[in-house]
Amino acid sequence: MFKSIPVVFLIACLLLSSCQAVIPEPLIEVLDEDTEGASVSFRVAIDKPGWLVLHPAATGGGPDAGSEITRAYLAEAGEYAKITMPVTDAIIGNVDGFAMLHYDEPADEAYTFAPGGDDDPPVTVDDAVLMAPFTMHGATPYIEVQDSGAGDGVITIKVGIDKPGWLVLRTATAEGRPDVTVLTASTYLSAAGVYPGFEVTLPTTPARPYFAILYYDDPADGEFTHTSIGTDDPAVQVQGAGIEEAFTIGY
Image (tube, rainbow, N blue to C red; front, side, top):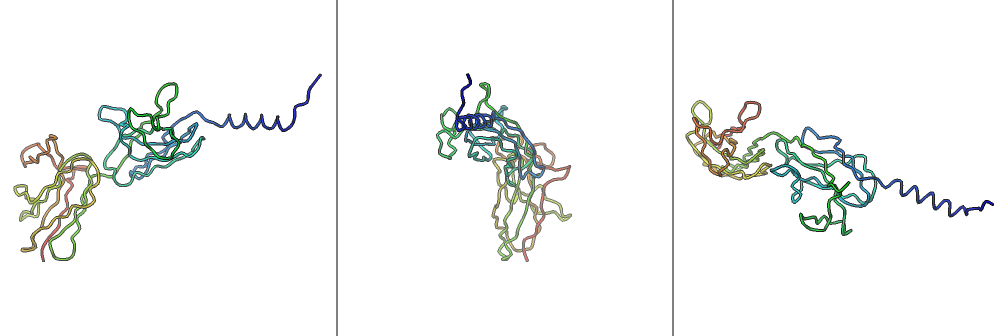
Protein backbone atom coordinates (compact mmCIF):
# COMPACT_ATOMS: atom_id res chain seq x y z
CA MET A 1 0.00 0.00 0.00
CA PHE A 2 1.40 3.37 -1.03
CA LYS A 3 1.44 6.28 1.38
CA SER A 4 1.04 9.84 0.26
CA ILE A 5 3.79 12.34 1.15
CA PRO A 6 2.64 15.82 2.03
CA VAL A 7 3.52 18.28 -0.74
CA VAL A 8 5.03 20.78 1.70
CA PHE A 9 7.42 18.11 3.03
CA LEU A 10 8.41 17.09 -0.50
CA ILE A 11 9.10 20.70 -1.51
CA ALA A 12 11.12 21.24 1.64
CA CYS A 13 13.23 18.18 0.84
CA LEU A 14 13.82 19.39 -2.70
CA LEU A 15 14.77 22.84 -1.49
CA LEU A 16 17.14 21.42 1.09
CA SER A 17 18.79 19.19 -1.51
CA SER A 18 19.12 22.15 -3.84
CA CYS A 19 20.70 24.32 -1.15
CA GLN A 20 23.12 21.61 -0.22
CA ALA A 21 24.08 21.12 -3.86
CA VAL A 22 25.10 24.76 -4.41
CA ILE A 23 27.60 24.88 -1.55
CA PRO A 24 30.82 24.61 -3.55
CA GLU A 25 34.16 23.11 -2.78
CA PRO A 26 36.64 25.94 -2.22
CA LEU A 27 38.82 26.86 -5.19
CA ILE A 28 40.98 29.68 -6.52
CA GLU A 29 41.74 30.17 -10.21
CA VAL A 30 43.88 32.99 -11.59
CA LEU A 31 42.04 34.55 -14.54
CA ASP A 32 44.12 37.56 -15.50
CA GLU A 33 47.32 39.29 -14.45
CA ASP A 34 47.05 42.85 -15.76
CA THR A 35 50.19 43.77 -17.67
CA GLU A 36 50.08 47.34 -16.38
CA GLY A 37 50.07 46.25 -12.76
CA ALA A 38 46.61 47.70 -12.13
CA SER A 39 44.81 44.51 -11.12
CA VAL A 40 44.71 40.74 -10.82
CA SER A 41 41.49 38.77 -11.39
CA PHE A 42 40.39 35.45 -9.88
CA ARG A 43 37.54 32.94 -9.99
CA VAL A 44 36.83 31.86 -6.43
CA ALA A 45 34.51 29.49 -4.61
CA ILE A 46 34.12 29.27 -0.84
CA ASP A 47 31.80 27.21 1.38
CA LYS A 48 31.15 29.93 3.99
CA PRO A 49 31.91 33.65 4.40
CA GLY A 50 35.54 34.61 4.35
CA TRP A 51 38.29 36.52 2.63
CA LEU A 52 40.29 36.37 -0.58
CA VAL A 53 43.72 37.62 0.48
CA LEU A 54 46.75 38.32 -1.69
CA HIS A 55 49.96 37.59 0.19
CA PRO A 56 53.43 38.46 -1.14
CA ALA A 57 55.86 35.63 -1.72
CA ALA A 58 58.33 34.93 1.07
CA THR A 59 62.05 35.13 0.38
CA GLY A 60 62.46 31.37 0.61
CA GLY A 61 59.37 30.57 -1.46
CA GLY A 62 55.74 30.08 -0.53
CA PRO A 63 53.44 32.83 0.82
CA ASP A 64 54.43 35.38 3.42
CA ALA A 65 51.15 34.85 5.27
CA GLY A 66 51.96 37.52 7.83
CA SER A 67 51.87 40.23 5.13
CA GLU A 68 49.25 41.16 2.59
CA ILE A 69 49.03 43.08 -0.66
CA THR A 70 45.27 43.50 -0.65
CA ARG A 71 42.10 41.56 0.23
CA ALA A 72 38.39 41.26 -0.60
CA TYR A 73 35.55 40.17 1.69
CA LEU A 74 33.35 37.28 0.50
CA ALA A 75 30.07 37.86 2.31
CA GLU A 76 28.50 34.46 1.66
CA ALA A 77 29.22 30.94 0.47
CA GLY A 78 29.16 30.47 -3.29
CA GLU A 79 31.11 30.82 -6.48
CA TYR A 80 32.43 34.23 -7.48
CA ALA A 81 32.94 34.18 -11.25
CA LYS A 82 35.39 37.07 -11.35
CA ILE A 83 36.93 39.11 -8.56
CA THR A 84 39.27 41.85 -9.72
CA MET A 85 41.78 42.98 -7.12
CA PRO A 86 43.31 46.44 -7.72
CA VAL A 87 46.95 46.74 -6.73
CA THR A 88 47.59 50.46 -7.65
CA ASP A 89 50.84 51.91 -8.92
CA ALA A 90 52.71 50.81 -5.79
CA ILE A 91 53.79 47.70 -7.67
CA ILE A 92 57.14 48.22 -9.38
CA GLY A 93 58.68 45.45 -11.44
CA ASN A 94 57.42 41.86 -11.24
CA VAL A 95 56.04 40.88 -7.83
CA ASP A 96 55.25 37.25 -7.03
CA GLY A 97 52.40 36.46 -4.68
CA PHE A 98 49.90 33.88 -3.52
CA ALA A 99 46.12 34.15 -3.41
CA MET A 100 44.63 32.42 -0.36
CA LEU A 101 41.16 32.01 1.10
CA HIS A 102 40.56 32.65 4.80
CA TYR A 103 37.36 31.93 6.71
CA ASP A 104 35.74 34.80 8.61
CA GLU A 105 36.08 33.20 12.04
CA PRO A 106 34.96 34.76 14.30
CA ALA A 107 32.24 36.15 12.03
CA ASP A 108 32.95 39.85 12.48
CA GLU A 109 33.91 40.96 8.94
CA ALA A 110 37.28 42.07 10.32
CA TYR A 111 40.43 40.43 8.96
CA THR A 112 42.50 39.55 12.03
CA PHE A 113 44.58 36.61 10.84
CA ALA A 114 48.07 36.26 12.28
CA PRO A 115 50.45 33.31 11.77
CA GLY A 116 50.08 30.92 14.68
CA GLY A 117 46.73 32.40 15.73
CA ASP A 118 43.20 31.05 15.49
CA ASP A 119 41.36 33.99 13.91
CA ASP A 120 40.39 33.90 10.23
CA PRO A 121 42.19 30.62 9.47
CA PRO A 122 43.27 29.70 5.92
CA VAL A 123 40.89 27.48 3.98
CA THR A 124 42.18 23.95 3.49
CA VAL A 125 41.21 21.23 1.00
CA ASP A 126 42.28 17.66 1.79
CA ASP A 127 44.33 19.00 4.72
CA ALA A 128 46.35 21.32 2.47
CA VAL A 129 46.12 25.11 2.54
CA LEU A 130 44.38 26.31 -0.62
CA MET A 131 46.49 28.81 -2.55
CA ALA A 132 47.22 29.95 -6.10
CA PRO A 133 50.51 31.58 -7.17
CA PHE A 134 50.46 34.62 -9.43
CA THR A 135 52.76 37.36 -10.68
CA MET A 136 51.88 41.04 -10.84
CA HIS A 137 53.59 42.89 -13.67
CA GLY A 138 54.04 46.39 -12.36
CA ALA A 139 55.50 49.58 -13.70
CA THR A 140 59.19 49.89 -14.57
CA PRO A 141 61.44 52.04 -12.35
CA TYR A 142 61.03 55.77 -12.96
CA ILE A 143 61.79 59.28 -11.71
CA GLU A 144 59.51 62.34 -11.89
CA VAL A 145 60.89 65.78 -10.94
CA GLN A 146 58.57 68.71 -10.25
CA ASP A 147 59.74 72.26 -9.61
CA SER A 148 57.70 74.17 -7.00
CA GLY A 149 57.48 77.11 -9.44
CA ALA A 150 58.12 79.57 -6.61
CA GLY A 151 61.73 80.25 -7.55
CA ASP A 152 62.89 79.02 -4.15
CA GLY A 153 64.92 76.05 -5.38
CA VAL A 154 62.49 73.53 -3.90
CA ILE A 155 61.82 70.45 -6.02
CA THR A 156 59.73 67.34 -5.38
CA ILE A 157 60.92 64.00 -6.71
CA LYS A 158 58.67 60.95 -7.10
CA VAL A 159 60.44 57.62 -7.52
CA GLY A 160 59.50 54.03 -8.34
CA ILE A 161 62.10 51.28 -7.91
CA ASP A 162 61.89 47.48 -8.07
CA LYS A 163 64.41 46.68 -5.29
CA PRO A 164 66.36 48.62 -2.64
CA GLY A 165 68.60 51.35 -3.98
CA TRP A 166 69.48 55.01 -4.06
CA LEU A 167 68.10 58.26 -5.43
CA VAL A 168 71.13 60.42 -6.23
CA LEU A 169 71.35 64.05 -7.39
CA ARG A 170 74.35 65.12 -9.44
CA THR A 171 75.33 68.28 -11.26
CA ALA A 172 75.84 68.19 -15.02
CA THR A 173 79.12 68.33 -16.93
CA ALA A 174 79.83 70.87 -19.64
CA GLU A 175 78.76 68.19 -22.11
CA GLY A 176 75.36 67.94 -20.43
CA ARG A 177 75.87 64.54 -18.81
CA PRO A 178 75.80 63.61 -15.10
CA ASP A 179 79.05 64.45 -13.33
CA VAL A 180 79.77 61.15 -11.54
CA THR A 181 82.55 62.81 -9.53
CA VAL A 182 80.06 65.07 -7.72
CA LEU A 183 77.44 63.81 -5.27
CA THR A 184 75.01 66.63 -4.54
CA ALA A 185 72.55 64.59 -2.48
CA SER A 186 71.52 60.97 -1.94
CA THR A 187 68.56 59.20 -0.35
CA TYR A 188 68.42 55.50 0.51
CA LEU A 189 65.37 53.61 -0.79
CA SER A 190 65.10 50.70 1.64
CA ALA A 191 62.52 48.64 -0.28
CA ALA A 192 60.93 48.23 -3.69
CA GLY A 193 57.92 50.46 -4.25
CA VAL A 194 56.73 53.98 -4.99
CA TYR A 195 58.09 56.90 -3.00
CA PRO A 196 55.55 59.67 -3.63
CA GLY A 197 57.59 62.75 -2.82
CA PHE A 198 61.11 63.64 -1.72
CA GLU A 199 61.44 67.39 -1.20
CA VAL A 200 64.89 68.84 -1.90
CA THR A 201 66.10 72.45 -1.75
CA LEU A 202 68.94 73.41 -4.10
CA PRO A 203 70.78 76.72 -4.67
CA THR A 204 69.03 78.99 -7.16
CA THR A 205 72.11 80.97 -8.19
CA PRO A 206 73.77 80.49 -10.48
CA ALA A 207 71.28 78.61 -12.67
CA ARG A 208 72.52 75.05 -12.89
CA PRO A 209 71.46 71.80 -14.55
CA TYR A 210 71.14 68.66 -12.41
CA PHE A 211 70.37 64.98 -12.86
CA ALA A 212 68.29 62.74 -10.60
CA ILE A 213 69.49 59.14 -11.03
CA LEU A 214 68.49 55.74 -9.61
CA TYR A 215 71.06 53.19 -8.45
CA TYR A 216 70.61 49.72 -6.95
CA ASP A 217 72.05 48.92 -3.53
CA ASP A 218 74.24 46.07 -4.81
CA PRO A 219 75.92 44.73 -2.75
CA ALA A 220 73.12 45.20 -0.22
CA ASP A 221 75.03 47.07 2.48
CA GLY A 222 73.13 50.35 2.81
CA GLU A 223 76.19 52.29 1.63
CA PHE A 224 76.48 54.16 -1.65
CA THR A 225 79.78 53.09 -3.19
CA HIS A 226 79.20 53.59 -6.93
CA THR A 227 82.17 54.69 -9.02
CA SER A 228 82.50 55.21 -12.77
CA ILE A 229 84.96 52.30 -13.05
CA GLY A 230 83.55 49.91 -10.43
CA THR A 231 80.64 47.50 -10.28
CA ASP A 232 79.17 48.45 -6.89
CA ASP A 233 75.72 50.06 -6.75
CA PRO A 234 75.09 50.03 -10.51
CA ALA A 235 72.73 52.49 -12.17
CA VAL A 236 69.19 51.19 -12.65
CA GLN A 237 68.51 50.44 -16.29
CA VAL A 238 65.41 49.61 -18.32
CA GLN A 239 66.03 48.19 -21.79
CA GLY A 240 69.66 49.29 -21.61
CA ALA A 241 68.94 52.91 -20.66
CA GLY A 242 69.68 54.41 -17.26
CA ILE A 243 66.82 55.84 -15.21
CA GLU A 244 67.68 59.51 -14.91
CA GLU A 245 65.85 62.82 -15.14
CA ALA A 246 67.49 66.13 -16.08
CA PHE A 247 66.25 69.39 -14.59
CA THR A 248 67.48 72.94 -14.04
CA ILE A 249 67.33 75.08 -10.92
CA GLY A 250 67.86 78.85 -11.02
CA TYR A 251 66.55 81.77 -12.97
